[in-house]
Length: 431
Ligand SMILES: Cc1ncc(COP(=O)(O)O)c(C=O)c1O
Image (tube, rainbow, N blue to C red; front, side, top):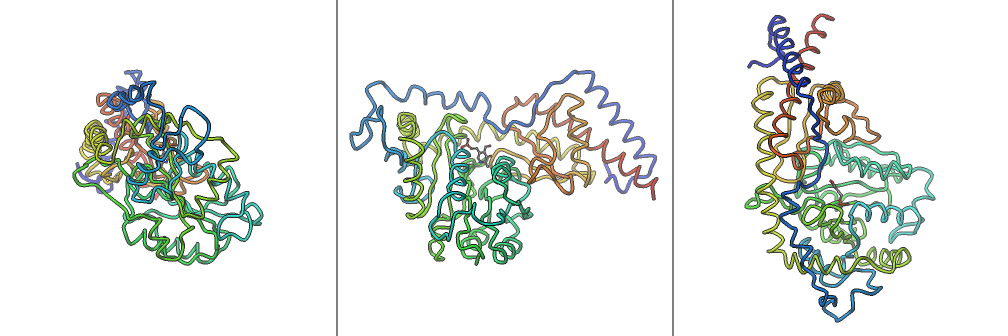
């Protein structure tokens, strides 16, 4: 199959006829498939079902003897703080182990930034006339929803294979005190699957920012989610990098067990400088008398230590790898030489990020939907839901069974080929 742009008009017209026929055949199948859900599949949940049996009724005290059935310990139980600390490579007293969702924590920390005077802050952010936030794109729609909710002007920064374009980040953060922070997913980013280079991490820690209270929201959602556990991607500990550079209060690091145990039924943490932790602990103590400590204990009993967590993550990888391979091999086979799309080959995480021709992503997603296959809405991976080039499509391979994945990606490829061939024909007849 030659590249579409080198094809004669007759060959392109033939291609459109073939892909239309394929689409008609898919339509006749009355499909109802969903490729938008970036969540674990049933096999993954079954693999960790032992969590629910990990806590007998006689086991309710933490290592200090505290009765976890009762109120208290807003900072989380010591065992959970220690486990997160060991996994993240940070001291346990810089970790707060909290409720069931890291996204919830990001929202809550953002509220503190807006309403309270942070370490290093002159005043709460809400008192600033204008607030801006750097948003590496494509990125996670729920991050962007938080900064939109609170009225930040969101500034997109392009992702590179090493993480966000650091020249742009340094320029924007260095010039404008209204730029208060940046969203980061440093390992296997959502959706590109990119892991930040050490150089990127160092520059984020060291850069001069016009705002004295600039914050990095370091969402380490996928730090253990390797597809090849024998060759994992890693990033340096951002807390110590920032501290070494004299910017200890800059990062808030978030993680959770949502994709280790149960999604939305696990435990989440925030790690930060001693000053930030003291401030958050005091303020969280006003919001709640304490997290669900029995769920924390249940997790600690089940997960035990980093080695056992690595074993569990290897089981997840065994389930996910064939799914990612299925998607990638169909993309390669159907689109590889056509020049109609490019995509990332992630080494972990939950997504494959696909880039089609400019102006075609929303059309392709709409065409697939009409054939009964739902993808994440085009544009969702950009602030305000607007992809200026309308070219990114997020594929979430984890949830559907492989047979469904195969059909869904065939449908996607037929739509991409048809949309690309039609556009080339239209462009040529217009010129
Ligand atoms: C980058 C990222 N952060 C956070 C979350 C949600 O995490 P939690 O379940 O801990 O709220 C997700 C879920 O898909 C995610 O992709």
